Image (tube, rainbow, N blue to C red; front, side):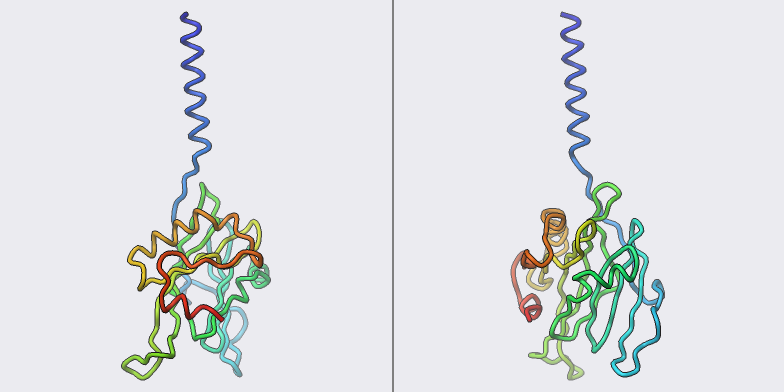
Length: 200
């Protein structure tokens, strides 16, 4: 009986350890894309005023930000050349747009699988006090390698008080299995004016 009890304890411990190994720990960390934290690539284009900068990311990845005609695109890769070849590097919006200076990285263990960024999208249907278009906030979730880099989800900040949590949940739930070019970018939570502006 002693041997049976001992074997039962060992099997129970092994099962518990296997459960711990199978349950991944997902965490957030942050990097900056402010110009002072990044490296400019080439010189600004005089005709269109476009600029390109490369910012340090996580786990050997870099963030590429290309701005032209008052619109930004953001991509990620092992190098700025690799990032420029990803679908995300062509994911621009019709209205003027820009991103915040903070990138949130979602990682399983030490491996990042998605980023979350706050975007400002210009709404030409309404003017601010200075006569320019009103700026509306949105969170975009972007999947990371292995596999292609592309947007997977949009969350309207004004329509969703828990927008940050919704973005993290979207990243955790389906970013890794999202197939760029085949799957449709999802609007997560309540849709609103900002997510409507993303449609081209």
